[in-house]
Each structure stands twice: as C-alpha cells, then as structure tokens.
Image 1: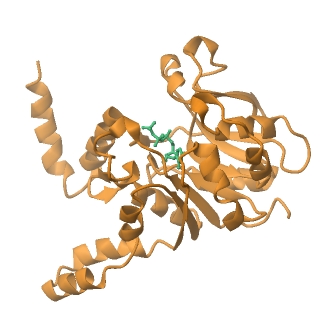
Image 2 (image 1 turned 90 degrees about the horizontal axis):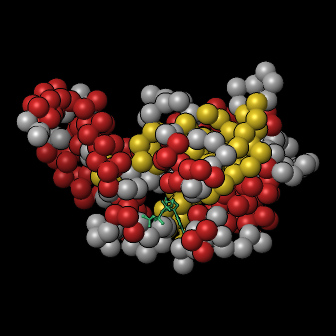
Length: 299
Ligand code: UTP
C-alpha cells in the first residue's frame, strides 16, 4: 500500500449508548435526533459524500433500525409526495437516500470508540480511511475533511482534527500535545491524553470527531486494553502510533477554526439547533426577531 492510495471509505460510529441524552435515546440512537429537520447523522453522511467518500460503513448498536430505515428509500412515501406535487419534500427525502453506498455493521456491545472503529477492520482492509463521529457536526461552509485527507496523503500517517477550547472545557475531550512542522499548515502530535483534568492537560487543543487513519491503527486497537471508563479508547491507539517510526507511524493534527456543533449533550444540541435554524432561509427571518424579543424578555 502506498500513502497515496485514494481514500474512499468513511466509518461512522453510531453505536454509543447516548446516556447524556436519556430518556430521548432510550429507544433511538442519539445520531437520529433532529437538527432542525434532518437527523444529525444525515449531516455527517452528507459531509463524507462532499469529501468524495462514497463508501460509508455505519457502526450501529441497539435500535439500529431507525438509522438503516432513514437511509432506505420509501417508495410509497415518494409516490404520495409525487402525486401531491410536493416536489420540494420529495427532493429532500431523496437526498438522504442518494448520499452513496451505505453499509452497516453491528457493534454488539458498546465497548468504546476504539472498539467501534475496530469493527470496521474487514470492510476497510489495508487502506487509509476516514472516521466521522455521528454526533459531531462540521458546518458545510467550513472545510475540514478534505484538508485532513490531503495531510494524510502527504504524510502517510494518521490525521486528527483539533480545536482550541477554553482551558476548563478540555476535560470533556482528548487533549493533544503538538509541535510545529516547519513550512506546513498541520502540526505533529507528540502525545494524547483522554479527558484530562484542566491542570493535567498538555494543551487546550481538543480532539474533535474527525479522523483520517492509517490502517495500522487496527493492529494496535486489537491489543489495546480498555482504558478510561473501561472502554477501548481510540486515543490510546493513536497515542501509540504517534510515537511509532516507519510504516503507519506518525499522527498529525489539523487545527480547525471553523464552526462545529456537538449534538451529543443537551446544551450543545440546543445551541446547534438554534444556530443552524437562524441561518436557514426558510426559518431564520422569523426565528431571529422572535429570539431577540425572547432574550429581551428573559430575567
Ligand atoms: P460518545 O462517548 O460521545 O458516545 O462517543 P456515547 O457513549 O454514546 O455517549 P454518552 O457519553 O453515553 O452520552 C462518541 C461517538 O462514538 C460512538 C458514539 O455513537 C458517538 O458517535 N460510539 C461510542 C460507538 O459507536 N461505540 C461505542 O462503544 C462508544
């Protein structure tokens, strides 16, 4: 395999328990929560498609039916909309089913993100691939994934995305200790720490939910013991690759300065829905003035 193998595969882990969003996620994956009028996962699959990743493997867990059904065609619904002449809704529902080739694999027991990625080993094979977390949205007006793919092709290693956060917020993320690479727009990762206490964090660079990985990660994950939270952590495997020389070694980070929306916890989810709805042509003009008067009436 050469480092310039074209990257066509995306793995989207969506098998987590979503405990921060209970009871909404009792019978439905959190990735199916609507962000305005599309489930979060559809934004993520659309982002993969825009980056040229036409082969998507979704890692699903319990209540996976809703996810699979969402990306399946429903001929009777399409026929009804066509009969009514509701071409706009027809177009919107067909968007979800035209995003590429979606495959599903089951993660029977949610043993962590690292384990979810390992479930993709057979499907991915020996080529670099992208991982997009199903509850993390990147604004389509901001570029990230294509840049990461480009950095993977140039370095031959693995690539993560990081964002600067307030120092006290780092304990909700993996934190990256990085060094500059002369003349490059990416940095090299020296060390990763999963959810550190702010005083122990090596930086305020938080790892966000986009990765472009060398397949060497699978062999490392296979022998990665459960770490923090008794889960097999992707961060632990990447930490090993970061210090490895030669084939498959090296982890690099792209510092993302665009708009990202976390839909995995309640407060961030509400902010994401309000922000995206304000930007929408069909909702923003009415929502913005209403929000202003609502806010003025608070307190
Ligand atoms: P999170 O840690 O945010 O997901 O995982 P979670 O465990 O579902 O959420 P909480 O903390 O209980 O509320 C990040 C991503 O990895 C997936 C999740 O679905 C989410 O997209 N994941 C996590 C898996 O696919 N399998 C796992 O075992 C764990």
